[in-house]
Length: 612
Image (tube, rainbow, N blue to C red; front, side, top):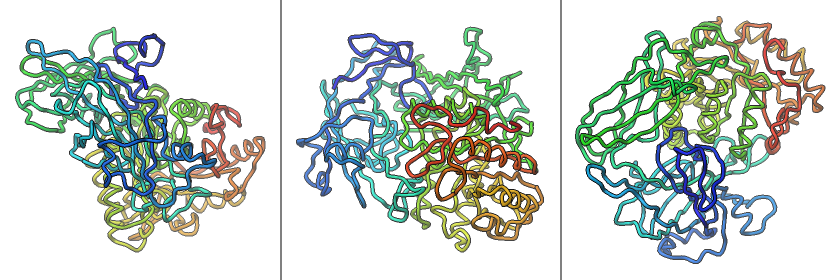
C-alpha cells in the first residue's frame, strides 16, 4: 500500500520514486486547490460484517481483517471477491462492511513568521450510503458535524485534529447500506423495486477516491455557485468560507480567460469580510464587461481564482472555471442566451462505468449530434461536468429518487438535492433539474396533497435560490397544476411505441393539447391545466429500440432508419426538444447506441442531430 503524493501545480503525477505523466486533476472534484495531496486509493484491508457486530465489538480499536479490496470499488464487487461469488453478492436487506489501512503523515510547512501551519483534511469523493470513519481508533465528525455521513453521490470531508495525528496513522471506515425504499436510490433495486428490467443491481460503498491534503485553517471550501444575468455584465458568485480564527479578511477574486490566461486578468475585485468561527455562505458580484457567452456552439469558459486573505497577508486559494449563459422557458421554446434552441437529447445512465469510460461516452454522444445529455437519476464523477462545460454539451440533471412516498423519503430527497446543488452550481452546462421521474418516490402525487405541496415548495425553492436552472417537477407525466399554472418549466412526456403510424398519432394528439391517454398516465394532476403552447413541450423519453419491453428494431440498420423517421416527425411539430432512450446498454436494457466500454457508435454519427 504505497500512497501517491501529487501536486496540482504540476503537469506531472509523482508517485515516489518514479515520475510519470498524468492529468493535473486526478481527484473527483471540479474545484482545484493549489496544494499537494496524498491519494489513499489502492489496497485496503477488508471484511464483510455479516452479523453487524463490528460496532458492538469495537472493531475500530483493532480487528483482524481476512481480505483485501481495492479502493475505489463497490461493496458488491468486494464482497463477491471475498466470498468467491460469480454474479454479485446477492445481499437482500442490509450490508455492512469495514475497510482499514495505514498511512504515513506527509510533511507540512512549519509555522514561520505570520504563516500558520496548515491542517490536514480527509475527503471522500463519494461513499455510502452510511459512512463512519475513525482515525487511530478515535471517531471523526464531518465538517458539517456528522458522526455518520448519509448519502452516496457527493463528497464529504473531515478536518483532522492535531491531537489525533501520529507519524503512522490507522484509518478505519465502516459502510452500511440497506434496501430501504425511503433512501435516494435512483434505479438501484430496493425493497419495492427488485433487480431486473429497468431496475439494476446496487452499486454502493467506496465508489470514489479518498485523499488527504493540507489545507489552511481559514479558507474557502471547494464549492462555488455561479449565477449570470447576461444583460448586466455582472457575475454573481456564491462562496463558502471556513474559519477557525475569527477576524477581518479580504476576499480577492480574479477572472481570466480559460483559454488564454497569459493575457492577464479580465476583472479583479476585493471584498472585506468580518468572519466568525465556522462556516458562512457569501454572495459577491463582479463586473465582467464584454464577456462572451457560453453555448454548445461556443463553449467560452473563464477561470475564477478566489483567495481568502487574513490581516497578516496569509492567502488560501481555490480555482474553478465557469461560463456565462442564460436559459429560459418562454412560450413553446427553450431559449439559450436569448436564442430559441431545440434540445437534441439522449438519455444517459452511467451505471458502473469508470471515469475513463464516461469520458468516451460523452464524446460519443456529442458525435451522435446531441447537444443535450439527460443524466438519468444518478450521481456522476464531478469531472464529467467539467468535460461537458468544455465540450459544450448541455446537461439535464436529476435527483436520485427514493422508491416510496412519505415524510421521511421527502426529507431524504431534499437532503440529496441540497448536497448535489452545493457541488454542481458552477457549471454552465447544467441547465435543467428534475425533482422526480415518473413519480418514483412520489407515487401518490395524484392523490396526496402533501406530496404535491412538497414538490411545489421545492420548485419555488429552486427558482428563488438557483434561478440559473430550469426545473421539472416530475418528468414524464403527472406534472402539478395549481390554479391552472404548471409547477414545472417544461411539460415533459415519455412516449414509447415502435409503430410509426401510432407515433404520428400520439404526437398530433400531444401538440393539440390532449393530456389524457397519450402517455401511460395523465400528463397533469391537480387543478385543470389547458395546454396552448404556453410552456415548452419536451418528449423526454422515446425510442428504446431493442429493449424487449419497448419493441422495435434490433439490428443497427433498421434502428437507424427508424430513428430518422421518428426524429423527422418530432421536428415537424411544435415540440421544443426530445431525448432518445438511450446512450448505452445497461444490464437488461439492451437499447444503447454506444459501446459501453469503447465508446464506438453502432449507428451513423450525427444521427440524433436535428435535420440529419
